[in-house]
Image 1: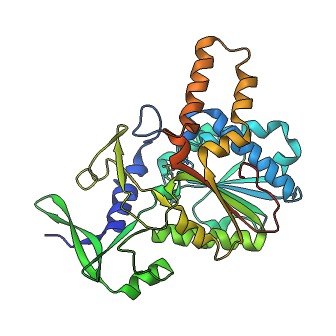
Image 2: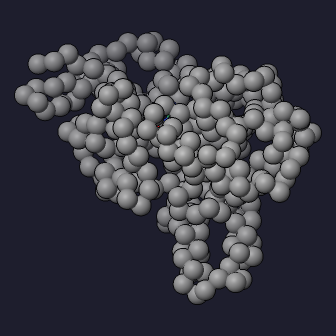
Image 3: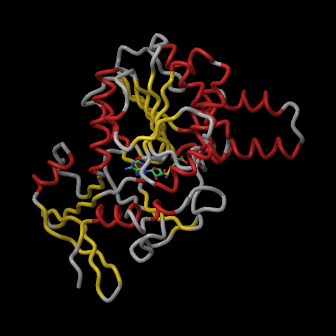
Length: 343
Ligand SMILES: C[S@@+](CC[C@H](N)C(=O)[O-])C[C@H]1O[C@@H](n2cnc3c(N)ncnc32)[C@H](O)[C@@H]1O
């Protein structure tokens, strides 16, 4: 029997192992991949993000140097469409330093190919960005970071580990002290909580990003699936060929994601930033004017192209599809009187 490893280390290995990791050697995103994301569904999604960026830049007082950092850019489609959409906002475009933080060498190649003419700096550490006001964009980034599970049973806490026997993987719980778990969480666990799903990597990123924003101004826009209730639950899901599968025995071959507990994210961002807003993806896109944009575009389209366009938008905003499960979170400094896309 091999040594048991914590759940997050298993996920990290399965997704990001330098040789065999799921994200390292291939592009899993797109109609022909394992899953599809909003920038692939409709270009108008990225256009709305571009308009939001221009609006925020104006409210920041049109700084001459602004960092725009995309976290985990997938195929680079959103970055490409943003650059295309802002081409008529010359002053804004001139002010922007674009960065992509990306872990996958294969996806970096695809991002570079897609963004051939755009001026972007690829980084692997947030310390590499200039000391300017900074806007971070994270579409389905945080859900791809590994999580730990802690379970309370008979008043004792355990951590979920994975062990291997005869070439098969199994879960195994190991005892943990309450104080150790609270240290990882950075907060006390209330009595009625008996399950914790947490990503130490996300906590580290939130802390880094929010301290940059606090110091140099700017903000972060997170778009991801998740829930608002304080109580945490086991939300891990694994997707292969657009279908859910068991991740334990599909190592290196499936995406392993989880839903964000936005209540926890809110508390973490509030440690450094005093303005945090949350809405659903549907409300955000509708407020940003995605349907008005579609109306303008569709005037001269054929019936089939028009129906395809509205079918795609519906997928993004419909409450039964991505509209409600996907949330949009904006964290910034209170002095920034900007809330475009939010109530
Ligand atoms: C689910 S994909 C989303 C891609 C893209 N944002 C989209 O919406 O299509 C997650 C992305 O985050 C990247 N990623 C995951 N962990 C990362 C890390 N620690 N640092 C940088 N990029 C990471 C993955 O390689 C991938 O590009």
